[in-house]
Image (cartoon, rainbow over all chains, first blue to last red; front, side, top):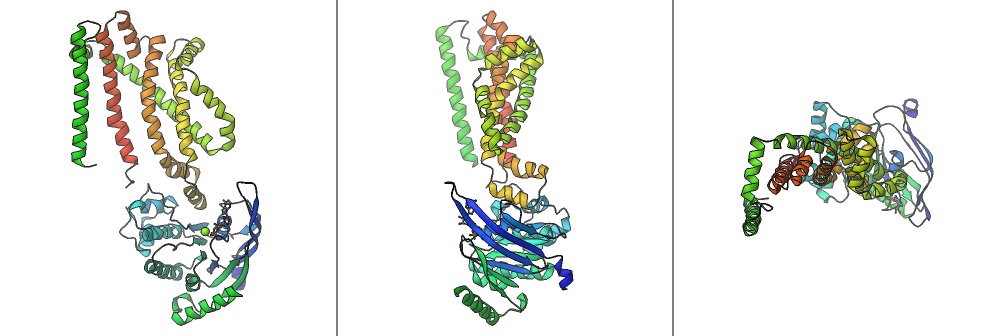
Length: 241
Length: 252
Ligand SMILES: Nc1ncnc2c1ncn2[C@@H]1O[C@H](COP(=O)(O)OP(=O)(O)O)[C@@H](O)[C@H]1O
Ligand SMILES: [Mg+2]
């Protein structure tokens, strides 16, 4: 297990990431952020709003190459499936064409992933006509459709009503159980973090660093209310240290 | 749009055209001169020239020129516009060129093209295209500048190849700008084509207008002009608008 996992590990070392503001001032955002992700592991990065979570994901996804450090994604799989904070579907393509666009051309595969996220009836629907919750599910389906080596999710359930968010989290849990992808999930919701994570990294400070780390042993699917309450309590204690 | 509001609009616009024709007819009656024929005379002249004369031939020739110049300027202008909209450096360097070409009077390009290349078809098309390219480029540059960064990041993160990124992500965002330049392009190009024909071709509407000008035949001048306006409006209604509706079908 260890040796097999070792070379499939995703290794991220951000020594320094700064932004230059319009005025010319350089602001450090991330410094010495190191994280290793094992294959099939669900790592949640927790941090307050504006602390640099999206910046970190964009570095890992290769959307921003202006930084010091290194990112090794390993070799297997089809790259990265990115679920952005906003769905970012192409409005001029139907839901199924949005999935086709990113490379999945197998009709059955498209049907089954849309079925999995509960959009079996929305193949031909244009994104404008979807509710936000449905659009989020379509964006999730798109990322899953390419069967990615790494699934990146940036606060994918934020600004949904709590019922919808809970439903989507349960849905995600089932999908994780089924496909066991490697996941990097960003949130500023502690409940969400302890519900989904194998491991939570707490991003803190300015520039942000990984300040704390918490590992959970109980498998996601069998975490009852008590376990979750306990995990949340432990997370809060860590945070307040 | 509901059916009744479409009907109301059609009725209003139809009525407005009738009033214009009426004013024209009254003016023609008052003036009572061959230099201002009535609408009826113009349209019978048009019908006669279409049936027995050369109107359709010249119309066809001019349309070919408009079409050729339209596609050349559209494709080149779009390519230039997107390139300049996407690259700060290229935009800075070539912006003065664009301004220069935008401000060269059509007449100057036409004369120079004929002087340099001779009174040939290619020179005519070249001159017209050169006049329109900067307009298309500027409209498309505006479109390329407003490309949605979020969608571009999406395309990059899912590793879409260049072709997919262009045809599925970039171009659909530019369709409204393309429609705008197609419409204004059609309107501008056919007017310049007439000048090109007048100055250096031996067929086409512009050539005929020149001919009837020398004969002082205002009826035929108006007949040719209206024939072409009708054709251009038909293209707008039957081609441009349906295409626009099709590419916008996803909008709510
Ligand atoms: N393109 C940018 N230019 C300048 N500053 C930026 C840019 N993107 C993000 N920032 C700044 O970097 C910090 C981290 O942003 P972000 O990663 O979006 O935070 P989070 O996703 O954790 O809410 C914020 O202070 C933000 O203002
Ligand atoms: Mg963010």
